[in-house]
Length: 188
Image (cartoon, rainbow, N blue to C red; front, side, top):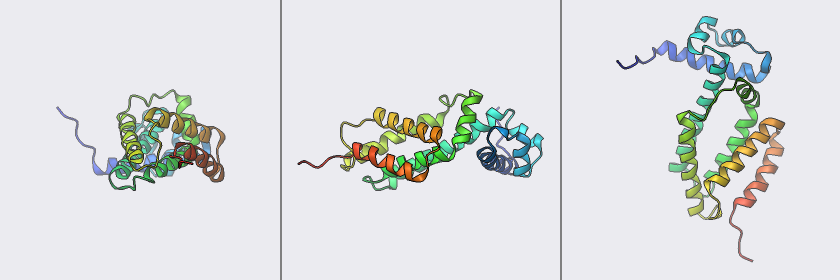
């Protein structure tokens, strides 16, 4: 028997909990409790635990939701974005998002949650490959740059932004250097 779809009020509560949790954890870090999240979301603690039995489940859901939003953004860039700039816009947004979610990413790591098994991350890689291919075809990215190199650069840059808490200026300068390496150089 297939699972019943969640009621509209349950979906709204879940979304409110996730929004509140992202704010609470980013603001208060490890000091934040699920009770703080419930209070910020305007729901009872039982409602939080019905949706997310553990703090790790809640943190994982925040990141998975963000990855799903990113996947939709990448797919939109693949179909509607300017092939010469969409790849770079995506890369820039990823680093900014990672930096803004540093507390959640750190807490998630401490909880030992495994995101690799999640479908959104697998889809994410596929759409990044499509975005990269369009950028290469448009002459915006070197032909010898593949998905493996892009993912290595993207993940390491995001990790550095998370670990060091980069401000917007450092993000921009660092991305300028990375993008310079990825772009096709004019012949002398």
